[in-house]
Image 1 (cartoon, rainbow, N blue to C red):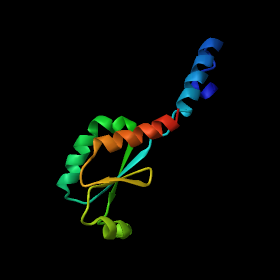
Image 2: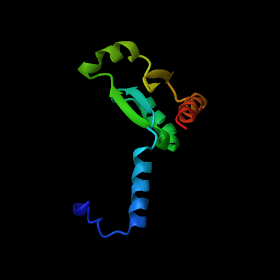
Image 3: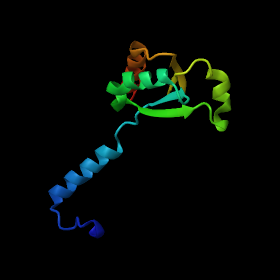
Image 4: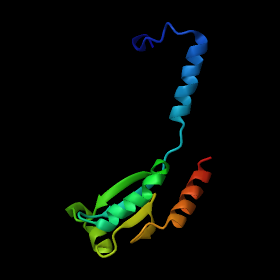
Amino acid sequence: MHWLGLRHLQPTKLRGLQLLRSRCSSSRQLPVLTLFTKDPCPLCDEAKEVLEPYKQRFVLQEVDITRPENSVWYDRYKYDIPVFHLNGQFLMMHRVNIAVLEKRLARIENKNI
């Protein structure tokens, strides 16, 4: 701990720092919301705007279905984007359904408590 310059801290401050560190390391993992998209995709842009108020509750991962490594997704979703998966499971397509998103996020968050 010398290299961090913490050796001069009082024991109570060190305990507080250790408690803070343990809380940060044990924080819950956010679910991954995957957006299958391509460029351009005005519906995808609209969907991302709708999701903006919820962005603290998930990690948004975008998958460009036109990239060669994503050809499986292109074959599956070329006529349906935007498509969303939550933690690897299909969630919704074409437009954001807030009721569906809220229900699934709440279920995941309640499991993590």
